[in-house]
Image 1 (spheres, rainbow, N blue to C red):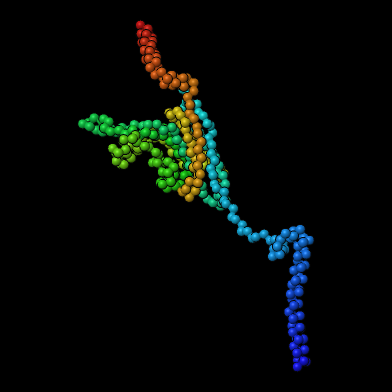
Image 2 (cartoon, one colour; image 1 turned 120 degrees about the horizontal axis):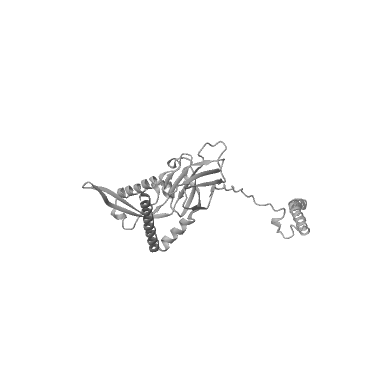
Length: 309
């Protein structure tokens, strides 16, 4: 019995030593790590679970936003002088497309440019004549509170091929989309059909006076991948006042960008003096005009009387 007990005690000791060896190794590795952490300044203040080189967290590369196309435009002159010898003037509208994304193999009309030059709005009265008992007399009239005095369009191609009616209406591009608001109190007296007829009459009369103009085909031409130019002809009877040149950049029927430039038509010389005097003192201007007309008539009659005598 003593021999068997000694054998069991020996086996117990051997098994205890075998189980204790991994714990001793782990404690030795832990002690070495603590000693290294105390000597390494980079890991001195780190807890044991964070020891070792710190790896940055993985980051996903964010896609870079594409630059937005933008139109930049200007006019050749900011001021046009109107004198007694004024016979008209040409305005050059030029510009470029910033951040153009047009592919090298893209065909024509990847981008479209529309230039609208609009004059100062004024009230306009339109009268309709009717045959009454063989005599043509004014039977009805409409007063529009705001009608552009001048309106010109130039584009890379016809505007109905560039965008739909909704986009053109929103940006007031085209004769059919010019904003003509009737005087308050007139709108409810007329039907939509009658009001459209009066609007068409205004446009027709302005076109006869060469004040509403659509430039010929290729009114806007590209001189490179992004450079463009257009020429707008102002007639001799263009009303004096500020003009607004609006330039629109289109792609796929939508407006990508717009730019506004301004031109001023101002009177100079004798015409400005007479104009200012007539509006400043209309009574004196009228009296002087009548006296000059009488003196001219008397002088002409005396001259021709001497010739016949």
